[in-house]
Length: 147
Image (cartoon, rainbow, N blue to C red; front, side, top):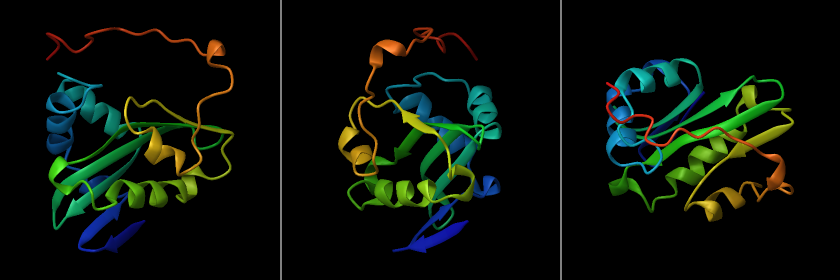
């Protein structure tokens, strides 16, 4: 699936993804994956349903779904490079992804965000009804000294 809009390409083609660019953003600019090793990013890309946003051939945005393509999908690692923000690229990316054939008919779509609740609410995401039912194992600083 590929859409061209206002000079940007939105694509689910895994061959277009630039793992180096994705790693650079995640490891240096994201609040959720600081210091993540390149090999971990490459493995996450290989095992997820990924989407990219490109200006010509340059990767300017990314998102991936961790999914079984039958019942559940978790949205992760969403970003648009700062210089390209304010052009509705994240909204267009969300629209493309939610209509993707591999994400239809699922029982649950989830994500976690510190600062983009307004964006995701536009697409039907809301706070969960029973947060007390969710549990997690969280490894703080998992990527420090991990190359």
